[in-house]
Length: 388
Image 1 (tube, one colour):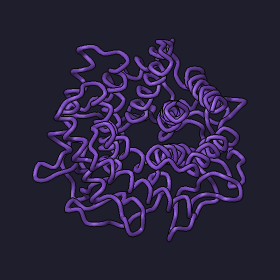
Image 2 (cartoon, one colour):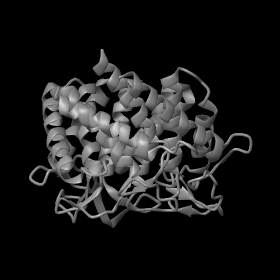
Image 3 (tube, helix red, strand yellow):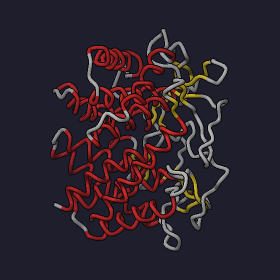
Image 4 (tube, rainbow, N blue to C red):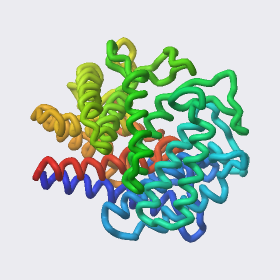
């Protein structure tokens, strides 16, 4: 296992090096929203609240992982920028701000951003707790409860205006629910209690009951307000991610019944995606599927990370050597194909055969310090458990 610990450590340090060298300028207090494959920043790119929350998470998690404060100033800057520039006077946080200082809004995704902000704030608090940060967390949680939570039922609703008035396009999004679940798990680590345990239990039950099509063995990304199916897209990466996050959440509250439900869902989702999305010729995982057939001739960075984690969780619960073998192969594939050994970080996208697509930005609005940082840290923890 030693070689894999070395690989993951080098990868995490490579990611951190890229971000501290190219993306975040502590001296000028500038955070760029995009960098090309060689690390050249695009000053005209918008900066999203979710992007900043993921920086808070990534830098704070790295500090805790290495038991060092080296990256804390970068987390501090992301936190300061978020709370000073992105707070919506009507509650919550704005979606993004462009390079001219104009606010941008995304009705479909702004609620997901609120979930990630809670996640980033909590990881930051675990690193650097203070009454101010705790108040930010409590205030944001209260906003989520009063605004996003369904006051007439269960779960959370998407489809708001910038003033948080519900539009006719309201719906229920898997992304909001799964990342709130992940945030509540993180909050439980910060301040455990029965209220959070109940929140976690409720969300596991909602996601397992409504957001997974067990017949097709795929996640449902968006439902109507009354829980009816909407046209769906099938992403292998989300099928893997949802599976292991459900397992992690059920383990966190030590609910035996939900652990059983979650690990069975993980198994069905994972086995199906491996059967249809795994490239047996060149390695790696395709993402978008139609009728269980990949429709892309490229591979994205994040489904590789999520599938490796899903495989390790599957091995943890079922003890099958095949899952461990495939996880280690995927860890090697990521290191060989996605990690930029010359300019650091991960390529966002590679061709079917594994060549980096150089026109794709290495860091962008949707590729911040989340999937690959979380992968490096959590995979290391899981492998340590396995190797004992």
